[in-house]
Length: 211
Length: 154
Image (cartoon, rainbow over all chains, first blue to last red; front, top):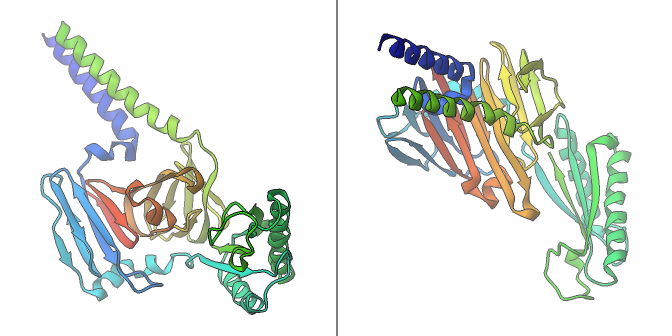
């Protein structure tokens, strides 16, 4: 009986030590932390999304700016409470300021069967370049697209020529080539769905992600 | 006797369950994102090894981001999700899958301690139910949003 108990205690200790050694892996069984969750308005759009905070006892929805919930134990359902903006900034201001700039997306349009930009899109190039320069470590993803005029193969190549034209623009503006990922989706991802062999200016484009 | 065996067996099951989690998580090596901002002491813990982090460095699924008492860290993931950490903080990227063409989308962030801010990206737009922000004691589900989290271990 004594031996039994000793073994059980030792085994228990071993598992506890192992679980503790795993650190964060034991989170699901560890209520020993105080957690504060605060919903913030999106900096770029000014709108506020929605979160649902749940624990074993239940859940609460946060959907207004600076609404928050504090979770101390798994036995009590999280309760919502709105914090003062000043208090939130005091606690999180520095971390909010450490967020990288928001990734941005651009679409540049091209002339028919050509890697030459439309006049309107040419005006947008400067804005793309400024966005790239605002990123501390830019990653630029450039994807070329075409309309459905011509064969799938020739459109893949046209899409690639368009992507490479944008890539050249960026490199000429001083961006490191290794930061740019240029590829083609040809006529496979239409912005405006059409049947085959359809002339559609809005599908002749390069999509750019700057992050 | 049988009671003892059952007890030992259940411990073994628990131990195996714990030990296999990191092994599964480490099999994927496509970069999930990059470190865009860093100051002070900042680290990436990968496969149990902690190394000083640098701006521009890749972040992989199952990496842990950690900051020292003066550290700050800002990361952008491939789906435009952004995460920043304040001093004395730790956040683990438990899961990151972003292959929209195949519908494979998943993001699980584990806020272990300290303070951090999360800004949702494309996964939140395409598949909000596949996002989980985990903390000790509570799970946060998001619908396209900015969330601040503080975890104070007792």
